[in-house]
Amino acid sequence: MCLFLILKPETDTMNSMTTMQKYAEVASINGNTLKSMYDLTLTASEAVFSLNTGFARSVAECVAAPAGSLDVTAQIGLQAAQLERTSVYLRDLCDIVTRTQTEVFKVGTLGAEEAAKLAKAELDELISAWPVANLKFLDVRGLVAR
Image (cartoon, rainbow, N blue to C red):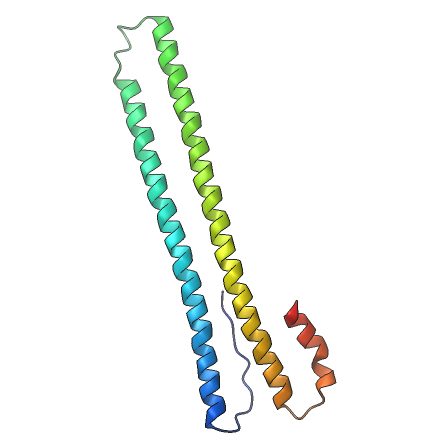
């Protein structure tokens, strides 16, 4: 996500300082959003790694059972247990992916809302600074507010 501030004619040093502060605010918002998304995906990666390790261990335990020494009923029981473990693994994996996707979307949406507020404030300031009639810019202001 990126927000570009609209450049306007500078009247004094104070305006350039204000503009630089706004650039810093936008960079801070984008940086915080990216950091939050990174933290969420790192946590999800750790959970998936742990889940994969546990599933691999359970598959190894099932394979390690001597197949020749078990009767058909015992072998079917082992296969049924492995199918159950597989379904639990897939359910847990889908839960992790869905939860992470939802959280990343929420973080991105909040960052976009903050950036949109800054863009609207910058546009309002731009409109008030120009000597042109403000009525010509009402439609543009409405688009940013949406």
